[in-house]
Image (cartoon, rainbow, N blue to C red):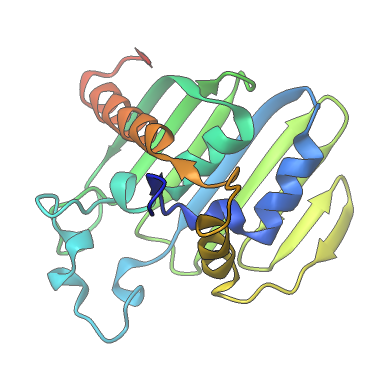
Length: 206
């Protein structure tokens, strides 16, 4: 993008847009996010062993590959400033990149964040749950639903909606939701902190 933005399209997902509006002004207590899908089923026409995802040298591994979660958590909850993690290559997938990462984090506006990312979930799941002082909010990307406390609403979401919205904003005069170059660099710092935390078994401050 001409205005030095990073293509984190999930910021433009209708469910996350709704969640962000619900969190405006709220006191946020905790957040839990999960994303998992079986790597051999990601690209049915491609042998997963030949994809960049399978190669650490090519930038594969869940921590890099699915960093959308790190971006949208910081977008929703404020910059991440502390990280602990465990992760690595634990399965029998024929890859040399990490297939599981679990992170504990603290951000500017949330004292307790947990995130699991994996290449292993045969069912394929992607969700985030946020507890505020007043409500529990859950969005399920697969079911295209949002729940506030015990009330659930389904939204009609097409696969490419977030990409279209991102590109429309990229060419518009105002682009408040685009991931800036600086925010993208901060996500890379969180990834590096998680790798250090997992390697050394300690919390890392950013």
